[in-house]
Image (cartoon, rainbow, N blue to C red):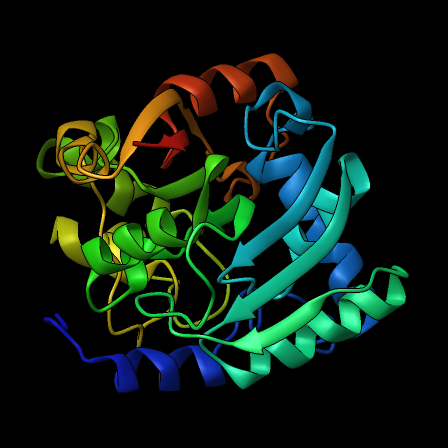
Length: 279
């Protein structure tokens, strides 16, 4: 297990292993890659009902919006599609992410200001953004609380932030009891495909399951309980909403009924999201 890696190791991994690379059957950064990635997010991550989740800005018009840790640009596209954004900003720790998001933005006719940033210490002004989106990033950072504090610094007084992290859900909390079923699923060929994580369901250590989800060489991946994450968030934010999402049904050889998938995602999801305003 990797312990407390520094930012250089985290950056190197994500530079070479950007999100969804190794899982997609298409060339990384191609139009088919982006189409498949969007389809997986809409259908599996958000079980065909993304609008039910309180992730997007509450206001219909946003002056300055930041997608922090933009990855391959999913949110950088989806937010401007749903609300009017005068100035869209996208930032990430890696050059690969910025170049990939730039390609995706251009193919969708969306203009944005892109920059390489360390989310723990950005170059943005105080109180600049009306909306900061940070999905699935903080649990990979060297110092998660520094990133949470930084989001508060750059968020305007009346702005909103939407933040999600890996959640210690029922399955992770009880893996010592459930891992026999995980091993059974693994032996039946039910696996997470790509990125060297095929044996994740046979893993014995709970912490390793979270880390391995993004790849066998991923230096850091944490999961939080609600109490753990709220303890840190409450130092900088007022929590307006919280909810669970994401159950990876695509690893199974059959299609989950939509209502069942939604139920499992909302009550047993692997991600927890918070809608926040600044203290």
